[in-house]
Amino acid sequence: MKTALRGLKEEEQSRLKRLGFKKVVEKDEEVKSLQRKLAIAYEHFRYVRQEKIAAFNQKLYKKTRKKDGGHDVLTFESITKTSKVPPTDVLEELEKAKELNCFDEFEIGYIAKVEDPILFGVVNGCTTKFYIAQWDTDVRIEDILASNEG
Image (cartoon, rainbow, N blue to C red; front, side, top):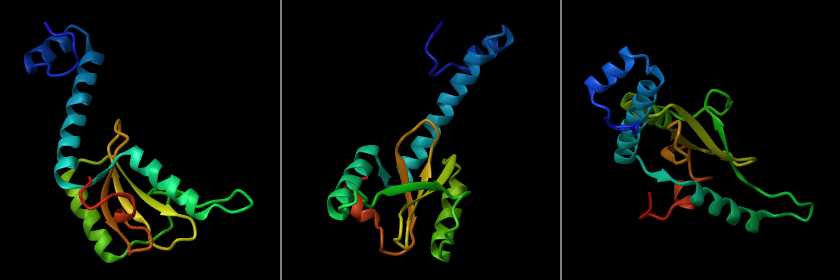
């Protein structure tokens, strides 16, 4: 019998659950759900790894640092907490992304005092962000990723 949490067969899951190993089965189901979500997300969306976000923020720091120590930074905020209203085309892209049922949350990537942010999808358990749409061209995905990346 496998001890790994990946790939338990249905009969193995059923047996473990019946015998009281509910946590093992739940964890296996979480792993399978994560794998499914990521497969869909990577297939349909450009992705931005944390290293790219850090490199972009480093460029912003060099470009915008001030004598008082302040500088611009790309910040992320849940769409449930934002007061920014997206244009219709961004809402349409968000609806399409929601239909795929692969994201646990959506975030706005923005720079303070810059009007137009970027919408990203997020999968819990994964640090990669998935590009959904951008408002305009104030902050663009192309500023973070090269055309052949993600």
